[in-house]
Structure formats: C-alpha cells, structure tokens
Length: 187
Length: 92
Image 1 (tube, one colour):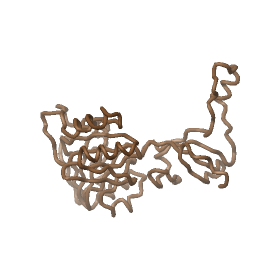
Image 2 (cartoon, rainbow over the protein chains, first blue to last red):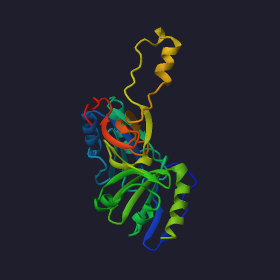
Image 3 (spheres, helix red, strand yellow):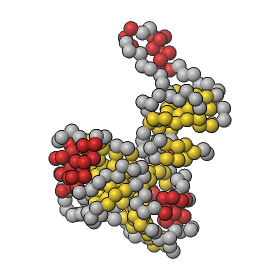
Image 4 (cartoon, helix red, strand yellow):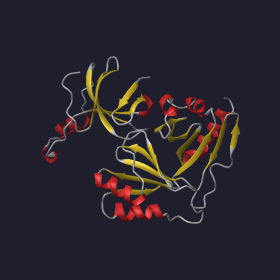
C-alpha cells in the first residue's frame, strides 16, 4: 500500500447504514481465456475462479469476483501489510500465469478503493443512484455486479445479508463517498 | 429507458450500454488498391435504416464486451441479440 493521503477520511454512520473504507486490501485483476489458465490460477491460489456470470468464490484468504467471461478480480479477505507493496499471491500468479503466457495479472491495489457498507438500508441507498435491479442480487450471497452508481462505475459484491463490498476507482471515491453520505442522510 | 439483455451479464438498463454503429461491415482486403471514394464509402457511409437494423453494442459499464443486436429503429424493439463471431439470425 502506497502512502496516499486518504480519499475517505472517516467512518460514517446513519440509522440502518454504516460506511467505511477497508484498507490496505490487495486487489488483482486477472485475465485469461484458456482452460489451462483457470486451472493454473486454481492451483496457484487454491481458489477456483467463478465461471458463472455475476457470482464470486471465496477461500480462507482470498475472494474472486466474476467481472466478464475472461476477467476476474481477486482481493484479500484480510488487510495486508501497510509497509509493503509485494504480495505473495501476485508473485505466485506472475510465475504461473504471466511467465507461461496463459494470461495477464495486474495489481490494482491502489487503483480501487474498497468501501464496506453495512445495515438494512444499503439497497435503498443504491436505488437512489443506480439503474440496476437489486431484487435478485440482495437475496443471493456472493452475487457480483458491475454497474453505475451516481454515474460512477462500481463493482458491488453481496458479502452477506446486510453486508456489501463496493469497489470504486480511487479518483472517483471521494465524490462517490460524499454522494453516499448525502444520500444516506435523507433515507 | 429500455432493457437490453447482455449475452454475458443478463438483463441490464440501457444507460450501461453504448451503441457502436452498424454491424457486419467487412474491411476491404487490399485498402491500398481502393480509390478515395471507395475507402470513404467503407469508412464513413452507414445505412441508417428506419426499420430493422443490425448493430454493434458494447456493455461499457458492465463486462465491457461487444455484441450484436437486431433492432427496429422505428420503435426500439430488440429482435435478437447474438455474440460477436456468431452468424446473424435469419428469422427474427
């Protein structure tokens, strides 16, 4: 994790909604099409990449989100070391995926900000700014979607009931967080 | 507002997509042998039909994949959606 000044300064709490940034979290984008790529990632990380659309898979240490038929995001379940930018998972993937030309691995740790939302009003907040139909999403644990929230591209994962992870690009995070606070204060 | 069925992600709202113009335009095999008029015809001229049209669309704010759509431009009715590389449907 690089020594950035935080885009999101503090945790915010409203009735039925808590917002906070979780950091530092390792985030990687992996891309590949071949079947060997899927098995190589599985063997390297002990984590099967989800092949069904809009779903995620989870191991003890990592979670993989389906982004498109040949693109996944992998992130760490626990916060990582603040003083280092080296990740064991990334070096394993570099060795087994990149060097064997099976696919591509990109470190997006500092590109994306992870905002965690808790509470029973999460979807009321999303409905204020997103065209996505969250009816099925909220019922199914592990669902993933890429959509628009307040005109900003976001990746949303249903971690468990009333617990949602939201990934947004760092340059948009401050604006999105202020929109979420503004919107949450009116729920 | 209308809904588009992305062949990868499922049903999503139109604002997540962008239109990419007419589909199935074949790039000339020997561009250097074409006259300026023929090249301009390939590069710029589009049919813009009122009625059923074959189009390319991209799910910009979702999976970022391109796909093809058969759409009636007069009433926005989507007749068929198929992936890139697949043959266009003859019946719709």
